[in-house]
Length: 513
Image (cartoon, rainbow, N blue to C red):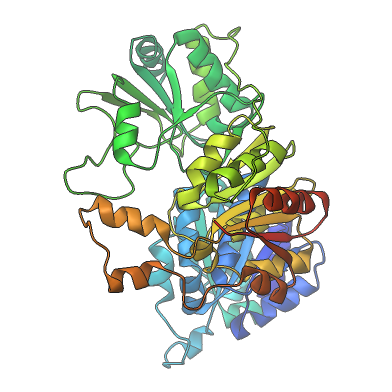
């Protein structure tokens, strides 16, 4: 058994059975080891940003851990933006990065790079394999690190010779350390705070879906506090029967208005809300200046235990959370715009769908329209590095093959990772992609105004517009093996969306709006 084989067997024994990959020469022994272990599902992505983004989406929807296989420092560099997004989402990810054989590193080979520099800047745990006999233990330690603190980025760098030289066998994984919990007296104090006028329970992580969301809803129902979350969350349960959770908005002044009457902000599974960017004469954070912030349980702590303790401390055991009702809009008609796309999606969205939203300027109408649609999960991009939607959709579809995935993205964002369409086609993933073909980075027009620029000249316009030539998303999708249709009116969109929902496999809709 060589080092690569010992690592694959260690991963499988630890429950890691999906590997998103874009390998190169340095990883060939690892590829051979994967080939001899059919229990590992290997998913090829044609760009490393798609590799790491898919691992993020897989974690968010499965709760499990996927490995990535990347090629040297440049390969990890190509995947950096999606690793950044995953870290901001508190996702778990194990990156396996092949490097040159250790004795080859003294030479300035073409692909030699500062692999430690590029990985350490975005990973919570990094280790360089010392020799082939330690690779299995290194892999087990990497899995443990990735699963710790509700999810971390772990990166194992493997010099090529550690993969091909003799190893002893797989290594067992020690369980992650127990999650930290708030002190009982702090729970009791916060229970009192939540009963006060203007109190807000601001939640994140697992408090946004499933049993933990219902605990948060019980607390809000009993104490009368507002239950709130950020806008760009990794995963939230929405639609009929989901717990009612109020979200902030992208413009910081709108969020400031939402929090105008807040007196105490209790954080549980979330950090302090902050504006995406600084703007002249606008605040960096949305809460009032005299609003106290209580960091009860940060995202790395035991969110479920904390909420359960608050339920007991507030006497909310028998409280009934406020659930969202179903309120479906009528199907729209006429010329297509972002609002009508949102209405059609909300009217037709199937029960149990997974919606990945990175439509940016069109995203708020979609969020508003679908809030009381049929029950669904909602994945956003808390890291802000664009190009997230298509890779996240791949990972979510592999994690939940029985559920329909809807990926809504702007045309500019989708161009970052359009190679994911090929993977959707190869793997037969049940994803319907909606591309808002507004021919530009429309968000930047608003951001230019936000910093005080009132006139857009030729150079600025050419950096914002995707025209001359126009992108043909039907041709791009079909070139990657995905059937597609372009629509220009609301009736056409509804018909195309029905096609995407009714057939298995990927389908793309280019919405001209």
